[in-house]
Length: 208
Ligand code: FNR
Image 1 (tube, rainbow, N blue to C red):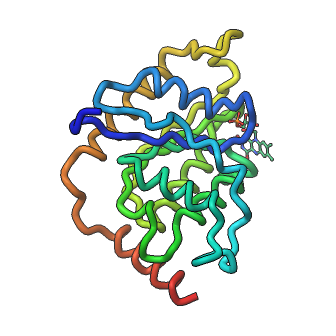
Image 2 (image 1 turned 45 degrees about the vertical axis):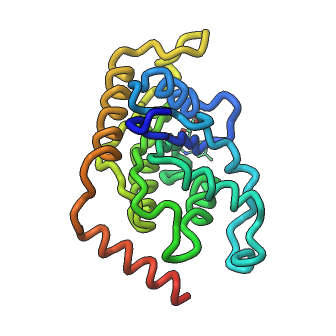
């Protein structure tokens, strides 16, 4: 792997075998420019994590959680494709993000460049779930791309063979990859309100 290449970890927020969100991540892998390399392509272990509990921290941290943190730490950037369940991200994804947010002050997500997209058969393309994920990532201190990519009526955009048949979505996916590359490869961002906010969140989490 060239030092000019960025290692990306793709995280589907759905456990469904035929997930539309996972299919979009597969398409992103196909479309990625040479500067972006997908490490092991997918994080598929969200369903193996125990429910987050502060009683399972420190020496009692489960091996599956350590593995999750190692995979995120090894990535230069994250791409998260989230379904929307009842206007929010799925619990399994929130659980993974909660685990990855700890230990407080040492999260592997801190300063990690991340882009979020989402798909739904409905009219809004999981836009509320994407906002939800961006809010949580920002609170943890990740460097979140301020762009959304809602793929509405997603079931109409794939052919019977499972391939994406929609030029506009393809263009949007390419554009998202370009933006992520810019975010992850560009100069460090300056201090911002969101960084202040995330520090405050970390402080409150440490105090609890
Ligand atoms: C949904 N779905 C859904 N869709 C949406 O646009 N807004 C929503 O609030 C919800 N809520 C919701 C709740 C629950 C419990 C389920 C199971 C589903 C539909 C959802 O978008 C659809 O099942 C997607 O196909 C899920 O994404 P994957 O698994 O295809 O990636």
